[in-house]
Image: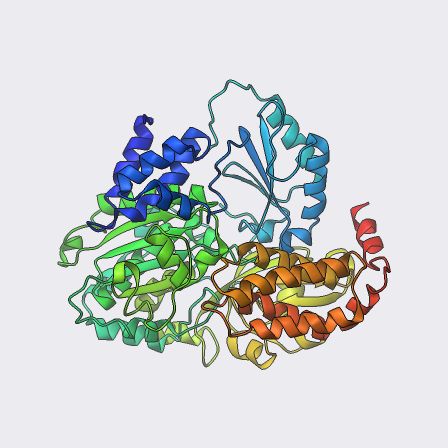
Length: 171
Length: 437
């Protein structure tokens, strides 16, 4: 499986970060960084990562199903994550969530028909003092008002569909 | 960068560089006594370093509050196995966003803390485990680590001291449970984050079956100041049994939510009124969770005379926890709050221990019934029964974390559950809609 030179460099660094014989430690980071480039945890990615860290694809499957950020199905180009946990709830994060669902016509872990935006109601993302918070891919948005949410979603919807995935997390 | 205005009531120890330009850069760090604590520690005996940390009364800042110096002293330094420093930056306790601020604004402080911990326990490698959602902090940390290697503050024979230390970042991928120390170690080894039975404790058998010091980001960030200024100076900032400051996250219904560094023992009322600017919209306080969603809730009356430290919170049968303060005004529906908290624990329970796996899901369903107006009087007691049967019956504290706030909410706000009986509409929905409009 071919990856970008940046991702290959990241993988190489990861595999050297753990003591000899402990390369399995790189498994979860490799899956997450791999997902950022590939778009989801594909069968091919599972096989490739399994081979590189020296475990079976079944072992990779067992591990990946535990972690909520690892997705087997492709997400939207912009994955909009809205926190409704207690600190965000107290600043009406739940109402932001409902608003986004209504505006886009999709629900939890669903993707718009054009593949541009996916939605996820997430648990605490560590932005509690700047609530309510939304994360688009890896970018945080704090103190989000209903108006700011609308503006954000409009921007994401209208953004060039062919532009590179700039904010998927820099490698 | 900072996401909220600082408060003049803060005591700046861990955040002392935050207002400086380029506070995250090694140049700023070196210009402000950076890495001098490491140089000082390199000239001390390991036992002397540990002694200073003991004198400082530094207690674990992740939530459990275990004395850090004692934890370090459990590491068998004479073991032939390599020893490791692991930093817990999995910050996932609802209400908590302090480690994020510490890494973003002063990553070299964390590196220096790791170096000093390494000197103290004869460790030569460390891992900083950062939750997956904090991807940008991996970049911040990796950049700082690269600067430290380039400047000779990491690697072989650091600044001619003869001490070797390598430091790596490791990303999580979304799992609250991995903030629990033994689950974090499993995750760091490339497995599901299932907790380990203890003993043995990580100090003896940690990552890769080797002795491991595992501390929260904030705990390790306090270490350079302790060595630089002496353990006694740090201890003097706090209260008799707990030294220093606490990164405190004010969240919920206050006018100025934010992360503030407050000395341990800071009065709760002053924290709300003066640091937090009072309750939003001139409302009254109803309830407060002092240290993240797993701590029992305090009523407004119980907050009278309370101070932000382990003992004061312990006397009120709750915990200082992670410093994630959740403030709820008089219009907050406590049934809704309890439900949202339980939805979280039911989602995050790893399923390993049955009382937690089943208990959190049953409680979520019962609380949902109340929220929908379908609860019965018997259900109120059932919530208490199930919660109490989860306490102390699981490998890790997630079961307790789910049960404790729930028990306290039902006991202290039983009348609100009664208000939801027999299909009655939530009496707080109207008030909340008023706020939204």
